[in-house]
Image 1 (cartoon, rainbow, N blue to C red):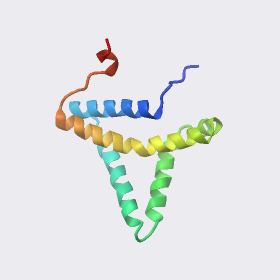
Image 2: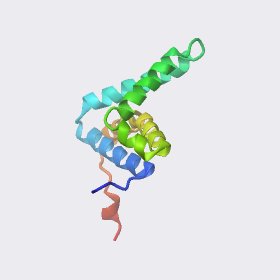
Image 3: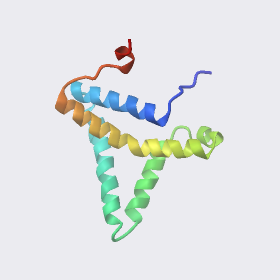
Length: 119
């Protein structure tokens, strides 16, 4: 059975590259807005901690839904490290997508694939 051998860093780099390319090409704007809204929601929840922790609980529940809605049983079988890694990646995704898609839209240049630079 094929299983990709991603690390957290390589998965984040690949996602950043895709998002930057989307920004350069001007595609997937709904994805940018959706991920930007998640970023704003996370910041608002942290700011609201001064008064209440309920918004943070909502954000944690939302991130858990994004992280585990497709394959929670598989991740539970893989152990707590897999569950934690997935939750961390799910929390990083909106930031990686939003920042890199905006950056790609501003710079308008594509980065070369690293495997093509080696030679």
